[in-house]
View 1 (cartoon, rainbow, N blue to C red):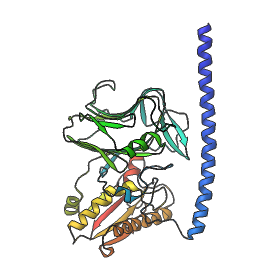
View 2: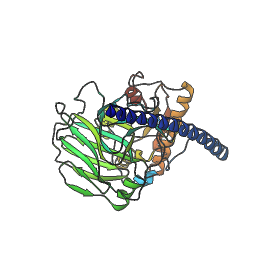
View 3: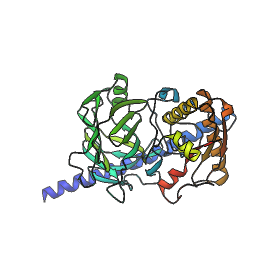
Amino acid sequence: MAGFTVANAQIWKKVKDRVKQTVENKITQKSQDVTTNAMNKAEGAIQGKDEQSLPAAGSGSGNTAVAASGGGNAAKSISDYKSYDFVPGDKIIFEPDISKEADAELPARFKLIKGNAEIQSYEGEKILHLDEGGSTSISPLMSTDSYLPEQFTVEFDMSFENKEDYMRYTNYFDVVFMKAAQNFFESPVYRFRITSGSGVEWATGGHIRLEENLSKALSTDNKWHHMAFYVNKNIGKVYIDATRVAASNTLNLGAEKMAINIDGRYGVKIRNFRLAAGGSDKYNKVITDGKFVTHGILFDVAKATIKPESAGTLNEVVKMMQAHPDLKFEIDGHTDSDGQDQANLQLSEKRAEAVKGQLVSMGISQDRLTTKGFGETKPIDSNDTQEGKANNRRVEFIKM
């Protein structure tokens, strides 16, 4: 009976703590929303014009490709990504929108394999929180366990919860890739691991020490860091913010599903998760189809400010146009069906103009580029699913 009483007391303490955290989160979110609205009004008054930054300095996210963004990345402008060569896959197959999920609930679109993960509000947006102090593992909740194609990309933002200026305790952050028939406690086909912030491991390549600035920022600044994976059969590359931290051309074949695991004393925040298939050569698309579609140019929510991690796609376009001086493009902006038709049309026009402005700033003559915005009028996928909407949010380059 005494044991039962102690257990009950522990359960009630956890419930009260959870309620307290939920209330604090809601208060924080309301406060953040008020502050953000005030800042936006003040900024608009100073600028005296609509927001449509031409942008070398956008940090945040956009509903052209990913969900809302708070905090900040280590790299804050496109110039910080000048050598970035990561380009997302052509077709999005998993991009959950957690913005409407309730705090303290299990995530609706992720499978909780072990430990505890829940939706939380943080700095005015919804994030996926993996609890500290133990082992937690999550995986995309798909209709099949065989969803990774031979060529794919994975992206998400993550943040360690460490309030000290170094990692006091041993901590592992793993992204594992497995066969469909394996359970998540077996050895993976290959794995990426961050080891207490000081270095990484990729596939069978052993320990790779990170540059000191990146290592310290990743493990101690409590800010968002962009993770990106490119896999094409036996070739795999991993990026943290603007830096390619690992590469291998000896990946084992056969990965069909994936998971994120943490093991240690620090919690982790996750947001903007995206899994995409393919990644074909853009110039070949221009030759065969007369155009190419990209989901790699990302914007702030409801704005035309380009996110810095868009640089991989922009760099690819610049290199293509430099190698083929005869190429001219019409840049077309497209949105999903959320929001007002006219607002979507205007937003798509501003975003197309922003892309043109950025390419001109990177050395492309403006007489080789024109722009159009189509809003939601030309969908390439269904607007009835989150992934369909994500595919409809795109920029197209049409050969002129």
